[in-house]
Figure 1 (spheres, rainbow, N blue to C red):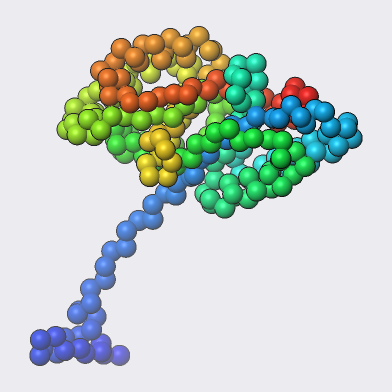
Figure 2 (cartoon, rainbow, N blue to C red; figure 1 turned 30 degrees about the vertical axis):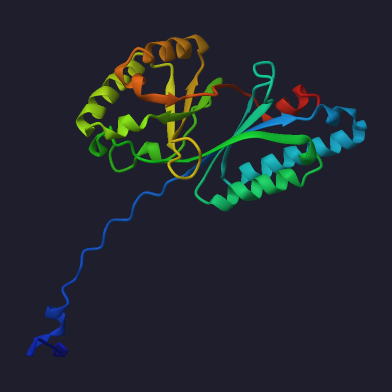
Length: 256
């Protein structure tokens, strides 16, 4: 069958020639939303009858297990005995913001919910680094997928750079970040998960280091203080030392 004809500026042109196919962009690898939630258990919970507490604890354990069963990333960490303002932290990563909202809603509506104060939370998102070449990482970018190594310690803190940093030429920033990265590579026992918060929370980044050796992390941070890029740090506190621990054990240890 002959091509249909359309008129362009008075000239008859076959429609197949008038509308050339446009190459479709490749679909982008999806990013994950990441949330770090820090909780404090009200001591008044321990004054309730034992059967009430047992029921509330079981309800919370089931909520955590059901969320994990949906193939949603969730990890629990204890901070009791290390900080006075928080008792434990929940680390989540998901592709759907409603999953974060659903978990929090169900937690608050649980029997223990009124006794759990969410003292702090940090929301962020995975993103490719502008300081590391895309080709070096291949088609699948691990920075876009949170894959915990499940080590003993997780060190978490918000991070904000000065506005002067963003005014520097990209080549200067890459040079300084290159030094920063080289220092990090001298501590192979420490792995880094950096996520981004521009416009979606108060910080610019959330930094989460995993390691089994707390002394290695301390030495790494001290050495990073001496790098040139460190001069452009506006804020990197509070710093949370989190210890990986099963959620059930955390509740037991808190006397829940």
